[in-house]
Length: 172
Image 1 (cartoon, rainbow, N blue to C red):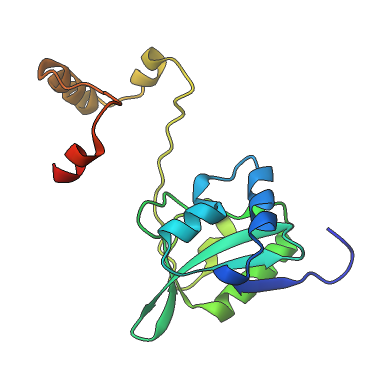
Image 2: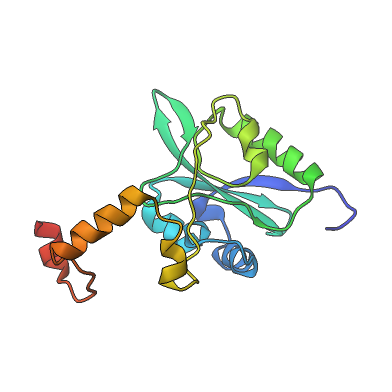
């Protein structure tokens, strides 16, 4: 961060610099697919980008209008939204003020604690399972009920396959 004043802007998706946005997102090892420009553009009907300085950090703000009010929300097929890029606690406080002036109605799944400060924000639990371990090790963390359901599925010949016709899934 430079010593000069921090510039925080909220841009419409069409005004966001796609390349700078994705460079910021892809340089953050915590960033998820939901923050990438193409995913936001495909899955969120309307979204804005909160941009710090020259895309040092970014935050997507999907919006829907309800009864004339601008509501920041989590669109379908989004697990959560996170701030991408590095920033200080002081800048996060400035971001809160900027977001608060943008919309007072916010419902997001996020691990970014600074986003839990809004009056209408609804905190939700997000369970993440690390699957970069052997199945036997993962299975030890399953509940008894879950193990029973897996046994039932195996007994009913349910199995995982990747070669399913998309048309069959849609008609199902």
